[in-house]
Image 1: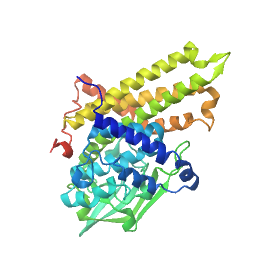
Image 2: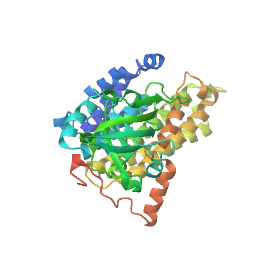
Image 3: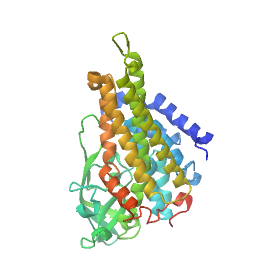
Length: 399
């Protein structure tokens, strides 16, 4: 059993790290000051191949696989957590869902531009009435009218909606059918009226790569843009979140590592009573726990990518990886705040930013308590987490 990353995957991680250092960090302050969406950086990420790891070469991808996606997500989030969102919208939750479930025409029309960063993606599932209970809370409707559907309703916490060119949006085509009445659509908000996105101000988070409240007013979607059949939307959404959990768990891992990096640096530099605070046992205990948690989370996240690359069922693995990685990040952020003390709140250090992003990642793609329910039911034998095949077109699984 070899736990070493293959050289090609290690090189991809180095490319992602170097990109964050040279392209994102020197420029992010200017984007935050202006409030402009960073189209240029997103397109450069696409041109560098950071979005294409889970796609075949004929679509503009690199076919590097899901382990590569995890490594890229960790490295970007370690240095620039603001841009971790891009890995979900441009590399996984949005384009991979189209690749998995779309017709050949839909795949060729939409996927290449998304993974190249030429078009901005979106995944619109959650609504104001609830996120974890996506099926029960959904009020957005889609009514067929000849060759189009007319969509009305609202969505909440939708990343990149204010800049979206091509996204996936879920609506009810049958109000009486529960989760079987949900249908998925590929939407193009900039091409038709009736779609409004309002960024939601959130303390400590980027005002550029924001989440949004979305309002649909007779928003027209062609029938040819329906993703899958009517009533397949819930299945498609759950499959999409499976892949989203890989990137979210890797992003949480990157944040946990960033907290550890900053804490080690500060503990070696900050001198109290004649010696660096890293020489005091209490600080050492915090550092030790952070290091062990990060190591354990990395093993679980990378194993999940490895399982996906083998085309194996991965619901159990993605849920556990997300739960462990987010907990590692939460613990690391809290420990970093203890080590930095009052300086954790100072703008010159990134600790309060890390804390805000950890809290956001905890919610995305299934809250910790949702993951605990899934993990417990699986462990108790009530519900096998891997009972449903997970569609994985790249590796020919779940068809």
